[in-house]
Length: 117
Image (cartoon, rainbow, N blue to C red):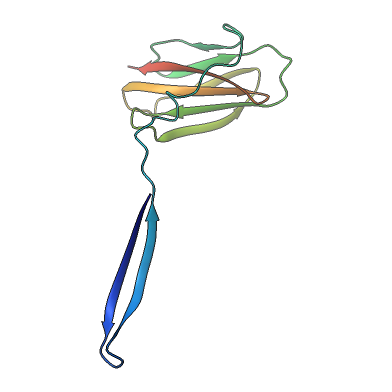
């Protein structure tokens, strides 16, 4: 963590006055790349890969809350969506490239990579 402060000289009192103070945090860890899958393999299907216009998600119907998150290669979240057990998501607004996803099924996480053509 880096603390930044900016002070100015008060000409009336000849003292320094704090004008601005901010804290910055940097991590070179990609949040999507650091998550370990704790859902059994093939519990949910995320396809096609590579994708072009539409992404499909299929999960068993036993989950109450399903969240889909998509991150770009810099770790920025580009999509966050509550989804149903069978969902189609338009991806025409995404730029071509590689993405990481996290699918959270009742608190359990499944992650993977997607390529957008």
